[in-house]
Length: 301
Image (cartoon, rainbow, N blue to C red; front, side, top):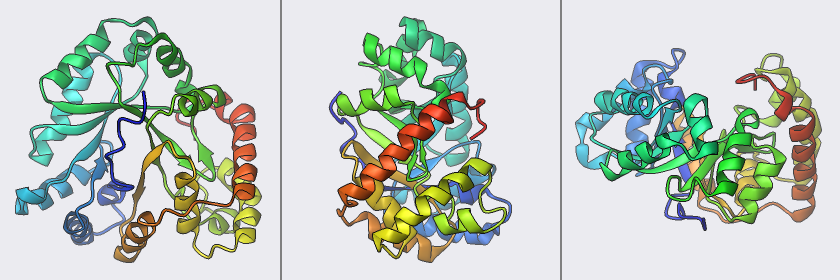
């Protein structure tokens, strides 16, 4: 599996903020149209509240501008996934999804390991043209099934890559799975580009870190960031993900035009982080994964 998603753009716009109630609807529509005007791919989900309706309204104004979409489809049975596809297509007003994001949970996790019939059902979904390609979402608590499926060859005809939270504070694949992905030169899409906030805010501002572990990690990472001499946390994060050659694209969300402009500009650079900084961050991530992440309760991080 040698990076079949290499045609993806370096930055994909995440639509989380287009569904948040704390962002005015007119601002969400302006941002959606700005993303369309910039020609960006988008990542979306029915889980993002009314983001699909915002996108549907923006798409209706000019069907020629509708971009390829990465859409969360979840797990379970093939029937569950078909229902989720329909729940996304209808408000978006489109007929197919470019990349479907599968989650290895419930019945799907079992069939990934055993090579069960759901896998053939999903391949039929692709053959029908409902989904162009699949990527498999991975978390610390769901890493075992993808690792077993990968080693058994059960993903060879099904998925074209993997998607996970990946930034200086989060690497949401267990160490053994991460090593396997890198060794196989698999395509990886990273989510949570800047981890929700600048590292110094996560460290210093009460409430900026939505979970205590993020503040604890920010305490360790902030000095590395400050020592790097890089002035922008967004630049530091984008240079970090670019430093892993298997990462073909990163997904980041914003509701502000200036932040979108910054992410687009920074994504066009090819500069990576210095090796000494990378080695420090990689060592931290291996420790966090072994000591914290793989022991966390589902969806607690």
